[in-house]
Amino acid sequence: MTDSPSALIDARIAALGDWRGDMLAQVRALIHRAIPDVVETWKWRGVPVWEKDGILCTGESYKSAVKLTFAKGAAIDDPSSLFNASLDGNARRAIDLHEGDRIDEPAFIALILAAASLNAKKPRKTRN
Image (cartoon, rainbow, N blue to C red; front, side):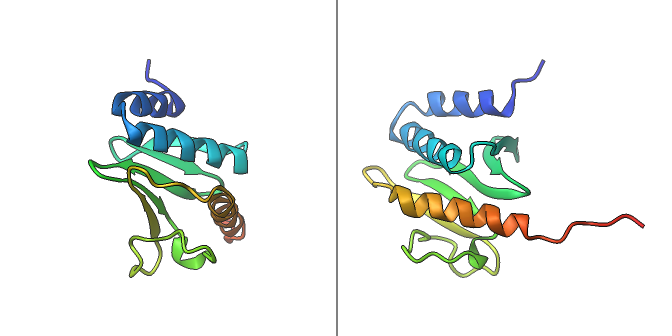
């Protein structure tokens, strides 16, 4: 029996055991606050992913950062300038969070909601 994606994310947070686990738990809680029916998935050999009508963002952990990559971030307004990484791409944008960083919760929730809104607008595939 395989663990559910949510259980795998729980395990990743616990395994990190430091500020990165706390940060990942905090952003996860904010994502769930913004979109209570968000779907948690586990992709690419161990990356937490949050989805609603497509990928909203991923939550990767590195030695010195937690990176939240928004799949369609380049198409999302970011009036609070939370995006601070992957700024040159045509599609993705990311937020690198470091030890001691504070998250602007209302601005982050607004980005999550904007990502969900953008995903909801994508054209549906039709079958012939």
